[in-house]
Image (tube, rainbow, N blue to C red):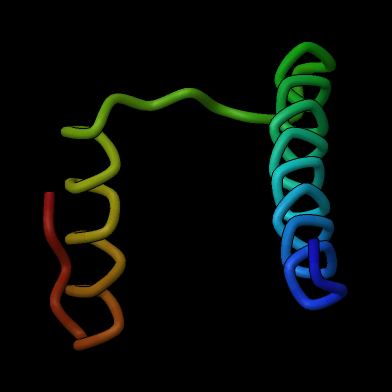
Length: 60
């Protein structure tokens, strides 16, 4: 196995571990009451409201 291939495999493993670490951090935040779980529909509506507000439009 070449050094480049080993390096790339290590980089991928590090990225995977960072991903799972971020998932764990977010889970811990939710467990501590420091987060909000939304459905995709809720996220879309929230983003539409934020976009409209940034454009000076107020949505209900």
